[in-house]
Each structure stands twice: as C-alpha cells, then as structure tokens.
Amino acid sequence: MKYADLHAHTTESDGTYTPVQLVKEAIVRGLSAIAIVDHDSVGAIPEALKEAEETSCEVIPGIELTAQQDSQEVHILGYFLDYQQEALLDKLKLLQQNRVKRVYKIVENLKELGVGLNPQTVFDISGLGTVGRMHIARALVKDGWVDSTSEAFRKYIGDKSPAYVLGFCFSPAQAIKLIRNVGGVAVLAHPFILNSDELIAEFAHCGLQGLEVYYPEHSQSQVNFYLDLAKKLDLLVTGGSDFHGSAKPEIKLGAIKIPLELVEKLRQAKR
Ligand code: AMP
Ligand code: FE
Ligand code: FE
Ligand code: ZN
Image (cartoon, rainbow, N blue to C red):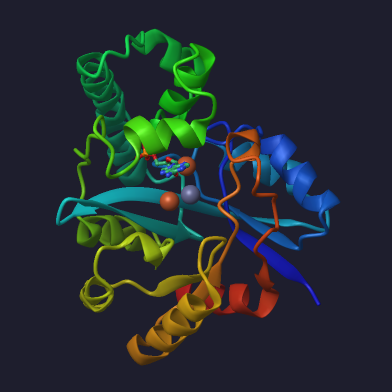
C-alpha cells in the first residue's frame, strides 16, 4: 500500500528541515507523497518540487493559513493551490508582516511577566521564513528561560497562557475563500483544537471541503467522531503528522500517514 503524509513544515515557517531535507526524509521513510503546508507561506514549494522530480515521492503544494474566530486560532490547510498567483502572494506578505508585529506584542507580554527576551533572538532563529510562536519558544530555550519548547508553550505562549496574543488578519471564511480562489482545496487542520465542533458545519457552509481526521493528538474516539462528521457534512478526509523536525522531536515524518487513494480524492476536488 502507498501512503502520504499531508502535513509537514519546513524552515520557511517553523519546521527545522529545509525543503530539500524534507523531501529526502520523505523518500527515506518510503512515503509516496508529502504535502508541504508552511504557516502563511508557500516559499518552500519550488525547491521541494524540484528536489522531488523523478523520485518516488510526490510533493503536493500546500499551505496552512492561520485564521481566528471567537477568540481562537483556526488553521485552514490548502492543497493543490496555484501557489504562484500574485493574488495569493500579496495576501501572504500582509500575513507575514502581521506576524512580525505579533512577535513584538508577545515579547512585550513576556516582559511584563519578568521575561526579558530580545525580539532579535526570535528573528535570528526564524531567519527568512514566516515567524511564529515556535521561534519564540526556541528563543526562550536558547536564553535559558525554559528547558524545552513544550515548557515555553505551557508556561508562557500556549493558546491559554499569559503571554499569548491572537491578532490574526483572517476569519476562517476568508481563509477558505483565499485558498479556493487560487484553485486550492480547503481543509480544516487538527479540529480537536476548536472550542466547539459546531463551528465545523459553519465552515462547511463557507466552502470548507475537508477535515484533517488523522492527526497525532486525535484519540481513536476523536478519529471516529470526525470520520462520522465528515460523512455527515460531505467533507473529504485527510491526515498528517504536523512534522516540525527537531522543533517537535517526538513527531517523525510519516508518524501519521494516509492511503494514497484519499489524496486522489483531494486531487479530484480541485478539478
Ligand atoms: P503561531 O502560528 O505563531 O500561533 O504558532 C502556532 C505553532 O506553534 C503551531 O503550528 C505549533 O508548531 C506550535 N504550537 C502551538 N501550541 C503548541 C503547544 N502547546 N506545544 C508545542 N507547540 C505548539
Ligand atoms: Fe507550526
Ligand atoms: Fe496547525
Ligand atoms: Zn501545522
């Protein structure tokens, strides 16, 4: 049987593998396809596509857009999108600039908690890619404020922690629309993070096409629940590991993999 992992990050956002390293790792792990879904960025895609040429592994162009609704982050995955369209790239630039501002706000909050982090430490870690909380977590480890990135999230920057800042530009409906406008298939990432499952039906009405049912943090009963919900709402089923390299060392590429036939259904949804 052939398998795909439809959720991987690179150094273009908060992963630690370069696009080329990620493709090599996918081949070593025997995956027939991987989707690169960096946060608010498509920067890794050209290099990864080139690396995957004439190999056993297909690279699926993708993205993970961060939206917000009802004071919570909602992550919308886009697959098979026309990643070179100006309409998309212009919007992504805005989202990326907004993320830089958000880092300064989170650093301000940390300061009030007695944690003196220099924003430049964060930007040195993120490099040219999209900056986010994972880079802040790594900066906190580097400067010795915490022992691990998971401690950084627990203590300071997790969704319910004291230095957290929301402040994203899009609603889920807008993110879904942006993905579909550039020919992508819109899928809700890791639905377990939502405060309410009722939102999923709402997103389906806004054009959502799929649900990331298979995910490392989903229990078997959650998988069953979301499979059932996907059926009811006529949504496609996807899955992936949310690979971040050494930023999330316990998750290996392909830790969650799905049969290639589910990828074919996604591909058909684009047509
Ligand atoms: P951001 O897009 O800046 O809000 O950061 C979201 C990213 O932070 C996610 O993609 C994960 O990589 C990471 N993250 C969020 N919450 C946690 C957590 N509790 N533990 C570890 N990583 C997390
Ligand atoms: Fe991430
Ligand atoms: Fe996510
Ligand atoms: Zn992700």
